[in-house]
Image (cartoon, rainbow, N blue to C red; front, top):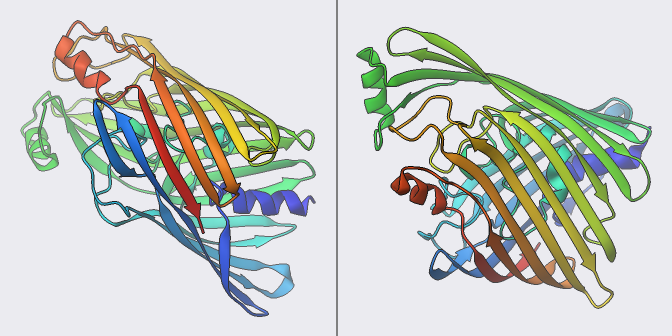
Length: 402
């Protein structure tokens, strides 16, 4: 049993992106740590310049040593907005911007054993994130093509690929191979309507009238798994899959089932935090897994993310990343809002960054994005709505980690 590997997986994957923590209490049995970071930045994009929050968060970690080498642990993490609310949309939460000072990011409890592995229950990073996390190190424009931040760049809670809600997860390792399997145990029904600017209550009422423009959607359990192979001290290979189902009942009584599926693999060389060269890439194929920039379900798409970095001895780290999520044309299986069924969806952009690492916990950075997306539509108003959340930009900021 590779105890170092399983310990690293528990600390790095479940609390990813990784952050150091301050131990505030420890005795022979219990320990408490506080972690997180404050990230404040000035960003220019979409014709505006503002001071904005950079996904700042605070977390509290608890651990307790039990008999027979078992260990209990828990994590609570909240996102914080230290700079106040803002109207600009720029990052990975275009339609889910949190105006509250605190909002829930993670919360789980679990048990671990060097031999028997670990099991955790709660809101936690999904097994799919094991496959693709190694390209998600940009501070400002993180990856939105790896199938993690689903439903128009939200946190992946609904289908368990990001910070999954109501997730049960088991992890273990054997030698240089580790794995994670999970199930998302939830029951949820909601309503969708092919009508713009309609509330959930009004949509439900429309469905009750047997309207053909309204649907009741049940999206319940999901399942996923991932495998990681530490081939050498620098080379890591990953692969994984995640699956769920939409059960749709139309207002006219008809029914349909759509499978939410994503699978893929990744490769990583080196360590992003250490001096020297770092490279990572992943590719995925997905079906009914994400939405376009105005909320329409994408029938199928291929996503690729890559990141190449070099950290010099003088504490300067440079990187470049390339991301693409290509659904092609005719990706809308059921036309919504009277739109062109031949709309094109290709999210594609480069990011370049320069970080000055005073120490691992204090980083001054400049990052810039160049967008090459294609959202061609015969409906130019629709095309403009698609394009508004993808743009060039530049940001400068500081990240202070606890």
